[in-house]
Length: 116
Image 1 (spheres, one colour):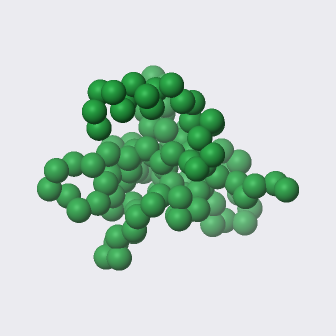
Image 2 (cartoon, rainbow, N blue to C red):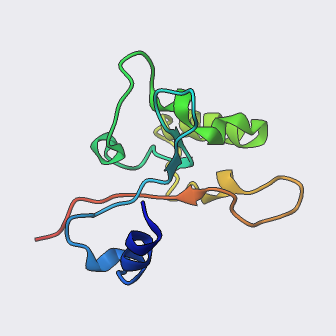
């Protein structure tokens, strides 16, 4: 992308582009076939990601699982969500650093079906 193209894109707000409904934070790294995800994708339609690896699930490509504290919370959250006695309406705490810093370190994205 040229500098001129980048400047032209900066004039638009995401919500002003009708063709794009969702942005899934991800990054490409040289030497890897698929991008790495930079967010929890459990609560979005997988079609929104824009690619799939036929040999593994999205967890294998998700940077959030490289941080043990977050991976442990995510695993526990998934176990609890399968228990009918416990239903969580948020998963935002899994993105907080355990050392006392409450700032999220990864994006939190969710998708809903459009309302007519």
